[in-house]
Every structure is written in structure tokens, then in C-alpha cells.
Image: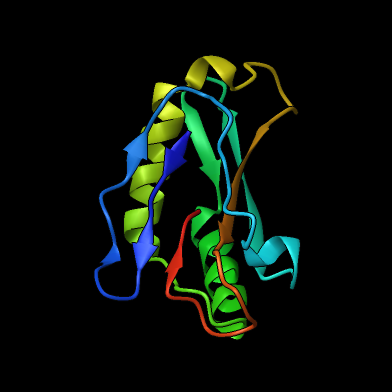
Length: 125
């Protein structure tokens, strides 16, 4: 799993790549109450030489950023996000199917805890 926390005071903190696991959310997380969340999927696939490729990640992160800004969530630096996602997918390439035309979606989601419908002060994809 690739996670990175954001706070209003510090911005995006150090990203972490950890083994697949359950994660917990604060019961006040807006997605449970006000549906403040963004979702975007990026396709990963292997080309004919077995190299893992991402399908138009720049477009995916641009859409995620447009959606995020519309609901007062922080945006991502697209180039850094693509670099992190590529590193993550390379580490987990054993899960990317090696036959065509299948692919594996890598889902990017932004959520944040809040106790009212207000702009976020922290977030985590």
C-alpha cells in the first residue's frame, strides 16, 4: 500500500509503502457523513516485453486534482505522484497480469476526518 498523509500546516508528509493491510479511519471521516472523498483509478499492465506500464497516469492525476480542488481537498504534485506510483507498481509487479488485454487498477482515494462540512485540515490518500 502507498499512503501519504497531508496536514494544513505541513502539506504532504513523507510517503510510505507498506505491505497490504487493513487501515482504520476516524469515525468522523467525512466520507462516512458528507461523502467528501475523491477516487481515481490508474491502469497498470505489462507490455509485450514484460515491462510494467501505467496507462495515462498524468490524465488520472489531473482528474483527481480537479475533483479534489472542487471539494476543498488538497491536490497532489502530479509528477511526484506518478513517480511514487511507478515505484509502488514496480515493487508489486507480481500482481500485474502478464497477459493481454488485462490490467490492474491502482486506486487513488483522498479522504479526510472532519466534524463538520468545512475545508479539510488533513487528508490521506
